[in-house]
Amino acid sequence: TKDLPPADKGNLTEAWHLGRKVPDAKAHVEALVKRSDGDNAGKIEKRVIDAVDGATAVEVKSGAGEIDQGQLGAYLDMVLGNIEPGAKAPQIKKLRYVFTDPEGAKANLARFAAVMSDKNLVGLVSVDVYQKGGRMVTVSSAAQARAVLLSLSEG
Image 1: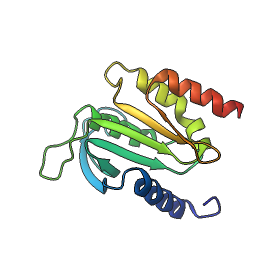
Image 2: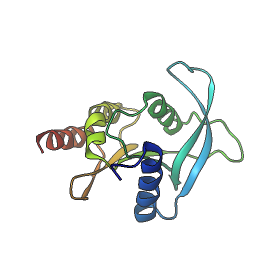
Image 3: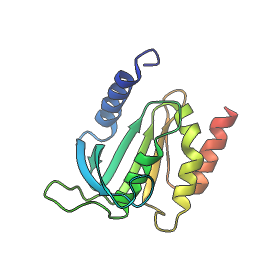
């Protein structure tokens, strides 16, 4: 997918990952999130979650760069219960980011190590990293995030 435009690459890798790993997840779920930080602190944002698998929000990233910190903040607000009530509101208890490009994981794992160290988020955030050759590794602690980051930096 490396030669595809970013939007096409994102759509294709998202469909591929969800179809392989979470085929029963609901795709493109809307949520109204009360933001706790950033430019929209105290305001309600409408967000579209790539997929919801049970009570887990799944966000698939195919790029090599840093993720949008506002998006990550909105997801963390969801996990902490800042979703506006309503008939369509998903009950998000956990967050899983998926990096289909190892360079994307490399650009973001230090941030996720910090998030996973937050006492309010321990055990609620995980990251799946597709490594060169297609092997996927799941990171669910700050120590694992730092170890995978080191392995990606060395390789």
